Length: 271
Image (cartoon, rainbow, N blue to C red; front, side, top):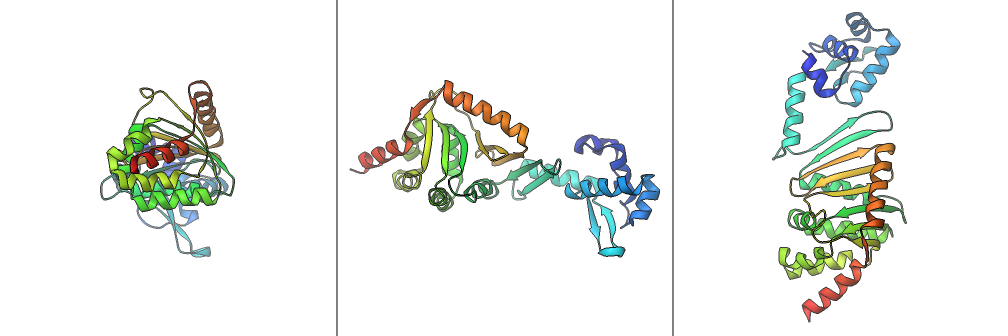
């Protein structure tokens, strides 16, 4: 049964809880759910559509024979806890907020890379924004498969994406120490040639285990070290985060050519 505790966890109102309980023991018709929940049919259909998008109630059958059954409340809670904890059960959980907004949680390094794959599929010449502090960058170099990094950067260059970045200059200096010179050389080559508009920030400022990426109406906060990414698809929230990013870039950062440093560093290190 769905209780007040579950309504608080998932942000449900009383009508939604009534619908889920009406369809909790067996697949039920719309007429049955309407009778049990005391809701008008029009309101009921709209509410069921919202609950279905959130994965809380599922259709059984098709057409006139279609019925609905809600998921088990405790099982759903436990699955969500597993996702947030991580481990071998890592995965992706998308929670629709409205027809234009959603929150997606990515668990596990391969699933987190889906964020970059999504960015790589943006149109040619699109602009996106990223802040990658040194500590987080070094974690990413250790966690991600090198072939994935190289493939994604190749796509960025083919699409001629314009990347506005906030980074630490020490990202480059610390990478060979972290993953070895040979791997660092390959990584640097994959970065060199990207269309970039970068600034560097002071080495001791915001050197944390987290990163931020912004594209279209989407903003992403991720931690490679903790193997979690939270993607927020919402126009207003993303506009606010983008404004904060630009303010930091313009008022704290210093103009910086990362590709040129990578070229010079790689050449000097291998000579």
